[in-house]
Length: 225
Image (cartoon, rainbow, N blue to C red; front, top):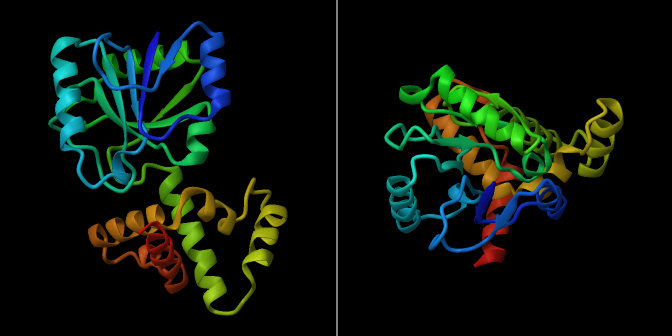
């Protein structure tokens, strides 16, 4: 299988595992060959995706077999793309996992298409969890709220970030504490997702961004500029 990565690189261990299975994994512009799978890992991180979208539409017109997964967490995936296009969660922890969350747009969601996706994932020794085509899917929506609640707890002076991380790792057996997860995922991504969900569901207080988390995101943006 030929796999193209467009955006942030995948973890080296995953690329190595796929290579040992006989797959080819390339990070390159789409020019000559036709891939079996395209993984767009930074779709929501870039403000203007028009040029890449045109390339991918051109690719879809050449090969109906090429499947494309777009990293879309904050918003549902548009329904006007080809049936072979779907959304997936590509936050850092998810990239390392062998279980992928995928959302197929409603007009294309069929058992036959799910079987095709499952066959492709099986070739990569991955398991798929099909989610409704809503922003956040499963893990990002829950994880963002946990991180937000941790910042709120710190803002209220209940505990320090270090103590909250320690308590959540040992008290709930989480692999990371909320602040560790925030640093790994990026506060900007989390705030963008929470703001998007809050606009869609204003009655949900869980999506109201804690002041400390918003400051963290603003600081990250300042450091990038």
